[in-house]
Length: 63
Image 1: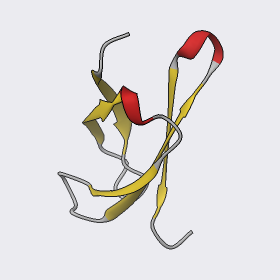
Image 2: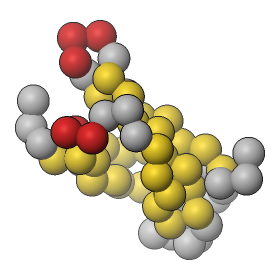
Image 3: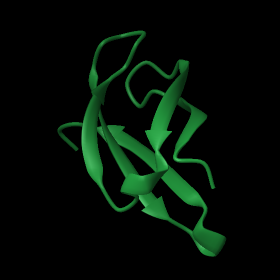
């Protein structure tokens, strides 16, 4: 697995398709990143799934 991985996802605010660069060595963390389209603060959840695959979930900051 690469340390950095690019992944496409949809912003939970504006719904636009965006691309995030994920640090796969930091699985199990939660952090805030602004959407590059609408600038709203998204909560990014990284976890390790089956076979050490990185799973990404996005949520609104206040949810």
